[in-house]
Image (tube, rainbow, N blue to C red; front, side, top):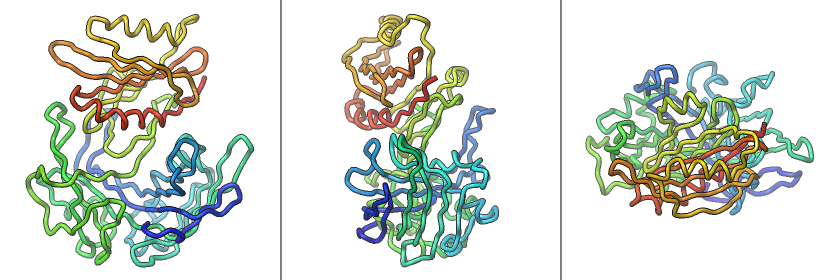
Length: 390
């Protein structure tokens, strides 16, 4: 949202101006099938999510600070099972199920490392240019008890984003996967290209597009512009990088820990971690293995780290070791140089205490040449860790 003062939030009983607010639609061309342990691709398997992000001030997004977000707004249900046109979206009311059974699915949060928002009700009150007027009411719980939250004002429409293989027809895909209104009533913008990663078959080449209402400029959320006259059949190294989509939160199967992932991170098949109940994730330049472990009686976090590094001393060299705090708990941070079978990698590992007898282990791996550039982003992902103490 380019102008301040068009929206406000009520926090701790005080009304505060909003720095920016965006609502958008993300259409993913693949979904992960946990039974088949493979990606299902094509319009019939597309995953359509509606999201909302609000920046309150310059501190918004820091741990504990207000950055209200909804990762998966159930618009489809509110619209009767069919994706609404953009005009119809502007008159929709979306609310949690009366019994609260779908509250966790919304992924509605007050901010990073901050409480979840409950009893969400959003009322879209019409379009004003390229923005929607919105009233959002909810509440959250902290140590002082239940507190109300309210947002009121304009949210800029960030458009409908999708990323497809270069040979795909984006207009046809959008019509089949979303179909809220005729594609020729929208303007298509090309916002980026991504090269394939030859080291990972699942990391495909793609072209990213954003569709906006006819005549509405591309939202500043993407920081690139220009309508795309037609999809280009081949990637271009000179094209701008793909723009980020909305972040999302993931958790292990047992709900022992969770992470908030920025755009570009996806689930990665890993049978071993599936058995352990952990998470395996990938981005363009790194992979992340995350798992909760139970420590044997009398074994401390330091003992566990020592045993873990000793077990791999033939291929690991610990280059850095220090202490930090993650999820409000003690954490040991290691940078490791790994060399095995002629292949080198850099690891960033966090061992995080989980109560008196457990730990969460985060292992980021990247190519040595890219590691230094990626570390700030990897540490930002680690900082979103939430831990459920047994």
